Image 1 (cartoon, helix red, strand yellow):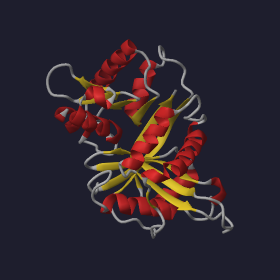
Image 2 (image 1 turned 30 degrees about the vertical axis):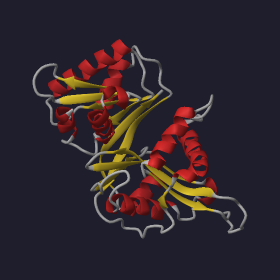
Image 3 (image 1 turned 180 degrees about the horizontal axis):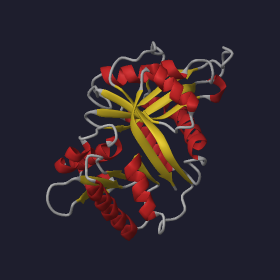
Length: 289
């Protein structure tokens, strides 16, 4: 695992998803981490890696020669075709994902969507926007309030409910994120018009979907539709950035970089993140099944 993590360290933001799973595998073993780690080349020092689990995440450094990049992707494609499609997505640095998908597309099922351009943004300093003081880490007692917001976000983003047919795995994932201190929320009990008696509900939320010793990657950013356009997103994200970087313990020991990736057509979200102080450092791509 040390060699694989060293490959990821060459570009910590681009490889955050794979590195986070590899770090778990180093602690608890591959079986418990729920995946496999593939390496290239078969002999000698590793030059590229791929995590194969719930997501297929290639890490093919752009510093490799074109021939070596092609060979690494081809090797990962052979392994992926041999095992069949088990992952819900192929995701990661854009060039590696699209090259891998180009080889897999002939044998894997038709995807629901290919998001071929997703700006990868990062911030390693204080946000440019004053953080929302009401955004905080959620606690386990609030899972019944947090889970519906997570389901709404997922359904809106991906196009289907993650709890259809039961959805125990998704609920367990949300609970695990809350337990690990990786869920941030603003919870109010008044409605958008300030009327009392609305019951506790999430106005803003975000999670740290992948955490390494160098990067915390934010996922699942969501504002209740009733509150959109009222200025909750930027201060909410600023709070996530400050708390993730400044508070020790919980999800990570003050990771120096907070990152995320977003669809290129989501102009409003891009403007919000840039207002907070995020800057583009690369590009992701995602193939969704």
